[in-house]
Length: 98
Image (tube, rainbow, N blue to C red; front, side, top):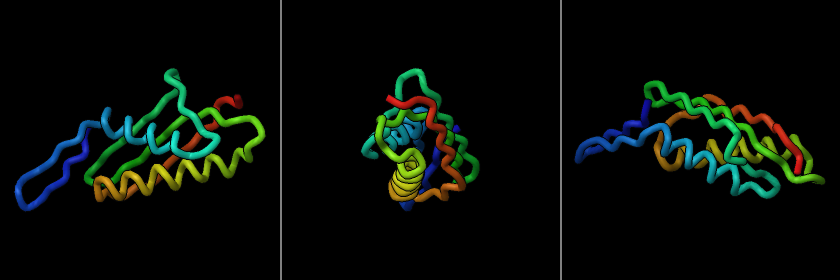
């Protein structure tokens, strides 16, 4: 699956792997959150609507629900701004505390 953006001059296609890389970057921009290489990032794209599932590690001493909410917000904002898609959900699992 990929994100397809239609414009006046044609279409732009962005594969799901690239979208997942953007999701990783957005999540890691949140203070206290990190996505380890072995962690799962799942992106489902269907007709301009996106669902994301991501596993993160959180820094010890952070408030875990706050980190998770910040990751959700950052990922949603990034995808909506960069692709003009609707983000239905961003499911965050904190799998580790470092």
